[in-house]
Image (tube, rainbow, N blue to C red; front, side, top):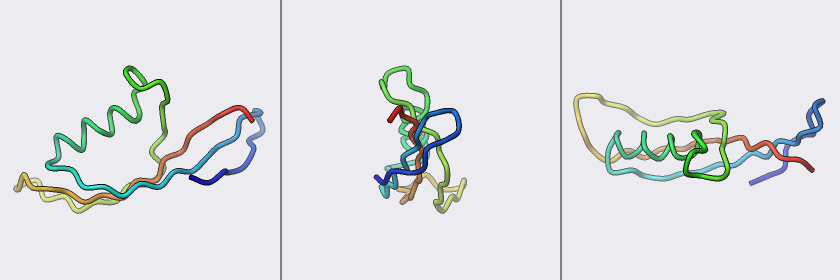
Amino acid sequence: MNKGEKLPNGLSEANISLSFQSQDITTLNNFLEYLTAGKTNKKSYVIKNMSFPLDTTKNEPIASTVELGMFYLD
C-alpha cells in the first residue's frame, strides 16, 4: 500500500496492489464483490486496474493482479 495524493474534497487516496490466484471465476467474482460492496467488509475499495486471463470455456484457476483505491481522511 502506498499513500496517494490529497484530493480537493479533503480526502486522501491510497493505492493497494494485490496479486492472487482464485480457484475459478465464481470465487474471483465473490472476492471482488467482498472488496467493493462494503456490506460485510467495513472497508470498501475502488478497483482502479485489473488484469487476468479469461477463457470462458474453462473453469480453472485464475491468477490475477488488482490495483485498488481506498479513500480516507488524513
